[in-house]
Amino acid sequence: MTNTKLVQTLKTETNSLKLQFIDFTKEYATNEYNRLASMTFDEVRERWGFFDVKWNRYTESKESFRIWNKIVKMEYGGIENYVTNEVKNAEEHYEISIHKLALRIEKKGLNINALKCTTSHVGRNIETTLTDGITKVRAFTIIAEGAIQKPHYSYLVK
Image 1 (cartoon, rainbow, N blue to C red):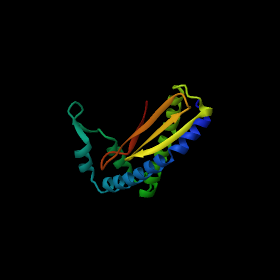
Image 2: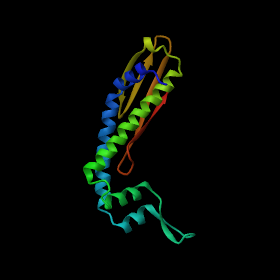
Image 3: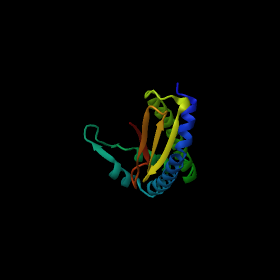
Image 4: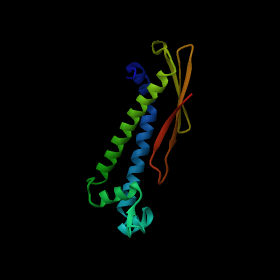
């Protein structure tokens, strides 16, 4: 069980990461929805499928194929619902990553009651330095995203 005070401190220190990550997710989800909604089945199959000789059929090989199928069937209920769903997933990812980060920091043996934090942005990433006056821990993110790469990030702790 993670320390509630540490989790709250990390949430406060990394709020700018959360907002930035959600913005990246909204932009990506909007573009992805529009891109996939405009493609035909054959275009999707050509781009993300492969022909399985053993079974003599095309096989879905990427998540985008599954998403495209749901978009065409209108299971998401339009772009607004799709983007909202992706933002909800991004917020869940943020919450989970904060708890994982807190566990990793707790293992470093910091005195949580004497904790001081400083956070700064390094380009698109953030770096948080935590110290109790004796031990110093540096936690930083690596954010990746692009035109066809869904936004995601990881924490590194040193």
